[in-house]
Length: 193
Image: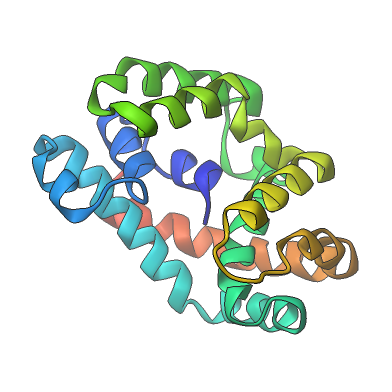
């Protein structure tokens, strides 16, 4: 799962949400310096990633993506799942997506003191660019995959993920709707939201 799902799965708790958001940004040493409430969010982030990576339905999606993305198929499926979460938003969240995103940006802003330097600048840019709404349409997804491709140290086919969405749209949507309720259940056992 990528940013949108991680934020939606944060049990409406500011500290869990911010720790979950920081899960991939901070190294172990930086994580250990965080107050305990944020560390719980990082643990939640890792639980979400681990559960997703080992779920048999996600493996089916990765098989669909493998011809274009090989070892990067799990990375691509994480991002694609945010697109399908946005598409199916009202099934899993009562708040409208746009107001949810604004709430997330407010929480990130309120906890920005946890970041400094380049990481802070990157997050400020992400928020000002309304990054969570990028997952709501194909143009935004193309932007996300192009950015991933530009940042990748290795040859990748990330921009081809748009073709994969178009070709496998119905099947990935079906599989997402099988998987996501399982993930929600796993998260609810962690933070009882």
